[in-house]
Image (spheres, rainbow, N blue to C red):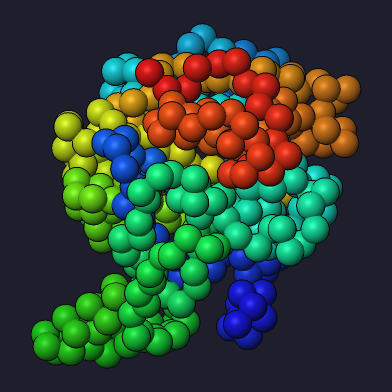
Length: 381
């Protein structure tokens, strides 16, 4: 079933069902060598300007008088949102970096569905739709000698396009179909409050169905499974975190997804253990950024340039990478968005080259068709 049709059939509301999907997918695959790559898709368009704040740019404060949260200084120019302050030890240890003003080739239409499709396909917009049906992690498996599919785990019923393609990958979806609105859940919790057995059973059911305010599945359960498999034969993993579509009340709304992202990174490090973490790169990327100026409801709208998070013991961290374009109106894309100065595929390709020893010709010709690698910053140790 086409995922657009499926999600529309759920009766999702808001600007796009893809911004707040009711499921997440986890896929893993075994590959030769000892290095590991974990990709986290941040669905809903994370606001990179809020997460990694360019406090040294004098135009930021005027554009965001009511959105920016407290932040901890990184390098004298950029500061990290306090919601990720728990990652500062990684920054100080050189195991955390960020890429700013980056994006896929997607421009102008600002659709979550199309943006996510292009992000996971890893192609340019000039390729025929048929050429965008497989994902770049699947094409990576196709060029790794001896790579084999290990397992895939889907919480929900949607496969991640990033690992779709000719290389085999398995999937698992729980047979859980619990669709209860927030008011109905509150009523049930009140009804069951005095009955220990039913109260515990209902809490377990809501937890398994990922019903915490309608947001995704249990991040800890997903990350623990990833870490366990990466300690074994798995070398490549991908999963998604939702909730980044902050059209209104962003100062409050962005805190929950930030907390999930922070927990995911820290729990993955702990679960992977030092011997595995030291050989791991985590790439957290989103379909596009958000507007430079806040809107009338204290949020931000769909934009273009955004930010990536890069973590792991194999990362050359402690830096905000990429060329900063500035926030003056003349420097913006379409006079409203952060101007992209790099391609997310370029950074992913660099990670693959460093981790798996792939030639540039393979990366530009097969894994990311028509990509021209231009990034000079070193991402991997």
